Image (cartoon, rainbow, N blue to C red):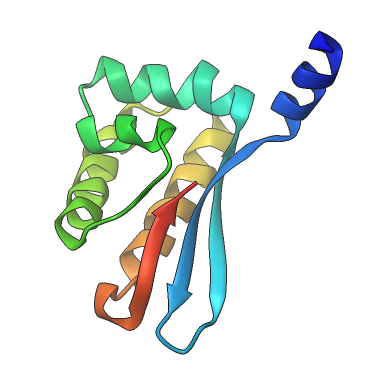
Length: 110
């Protein structure tokens, strides 16, 4: 039973799920479960990025929260180490900046 749980845990991932008012659903992949909890979350917590730290909980984003997340990502970008992690962070930030909140029925961290 524990082995099955661990295998499923490794497959889990964090992403931002968006649904437009036209019903089109898309997602921005963020991280695997392990990478999130071993790298991203400790980094967010170390630099007290409250909105980014809340990504560990599934929830709908509010407009001001999306703006705060973008601001926090800009602050934390210089502290990200590793070539792949920097590329990933820049990709996520670019995708977040492209979101026009008013065009979506919901934007969810999941």
